[in-house]
Image (tube, rainbow, N blue to C red; front, top):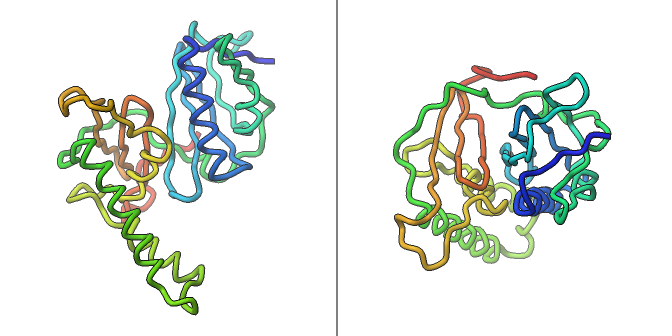
Length: 230
């Protein structure tokens, strides 16, 4: 049994919250864990958004398990959540599961460069609120005979595939960041004191990064460039 010693109760609580949000969208969700040194990366893919969500967790001491100094395993998100002890700031690594296809293809570890044009966090949150309201309005206006799953999906695809300005980042990535708790701000704080948000690119990937987690998405039309299969 491998026990992860997390940095503090706050890290444990944030990990549990992230796993709970993933399970809200997929009760059978799996997550891929990668740990080296005092850093643990938790990868998940909420199916509603078609993006890769990444939560970085600080460990209290460098990961070490016998002769292994790195951890790379795909596990059940539900089993991992059940093992999180917030008071003790620990989590037990569950038995490995057969990972879904996305777990074998992760963004590159390096080569990221900042991309311009990303709006401020407040503007991003306002954008999500606006498109959610638009979706509800447009679907609510459909006559009963047209309120079908294919029609709802069509409207959703049209709205969520829009890009944020000229960045190429699909709106669904920002919505995912908001829904997973990555885009939260400090209530009442001025803009300069809000948590920073940045957009980065590496090959075919775009990454929306915040202090609370990242959302990675493949850019359309770039084929299979810079795919990291591990």
